[in-house]
Length: 339
Ligand code: ASP
Image 1 (tube, rainbow, N blue to C red):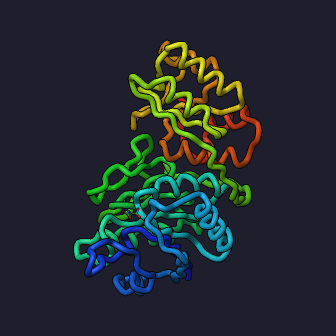
Image 2 (cartoon, helix red, strand yellow; image 1 turned 90 degrees about the vertical axis):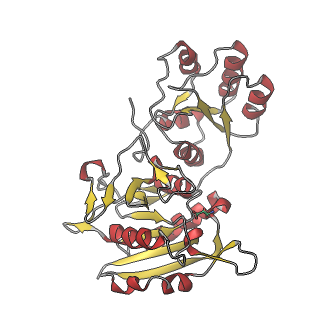
């Protein structure tokens, strides 16, 4: 019988309303199991690892990502797949980070959670949990059907590093507009075979070292030199710059000069768009041509979540900013499409 490891980190799925304060607080995994007697009927064995400290995912951080990735590595040979229960607020960040940390992954790592606690009458948690387990357990010709880090939510399976939390009040919490969904569940569970990554023959490798020396520069008309300089001069090695449209910025000389100084001093600047759909095209407009010339990295159609975690991952692997810049522009785990 196949085995699935459920790792419980926290999130609304495992919260209960405090009878007095009415505030949502995490509960332990046994209480979750009591709400899903259907788990007994699955045709796989379930192992559970519950984090010692159950958290709201707003408290997630790279140290916990390393712990999570380490846990996956230590059970990698014993189980057929992983289901990670996680709050939806930062789920896309954790899924993106893990996609970079788990190289040559050949087993499913399926994140899920819910918008309503599992004990609530109208909860979305049960369907999310049961189908996430089914996906983690799904095989064809003895090989995992989805050997990727994914998010399963509201009947859809998304590539983790292509998704972001889109809605905080509907069950449809996630979207991945720049990449097709990998599976859809309804009467049948249908996999989009051609959109799912196929693992190579290389062995699985864990990369635990993430470096959080990253700043974010979100542009807006009227941004001042003081604000831009403060961000670029912060004690960081990488800057994710959220630009307009297809990767455009102001062409004001002071702005270009500040970016160039930062790059010349050894910092890496990555250009991603504030648009949720579409891609950065450095050099298409006059307003992005100079960025390309001074060595800004092209983030193509990466999500913000993938951009930040990929920067942390690459800074943790490499010292040479030119190498970091080069690899930011390369599709490492299906996180971007070079156009
Ligand atoms: N605040 C919760 C969390 O991210 C929301 C959720 O679980 O959906 O932990």
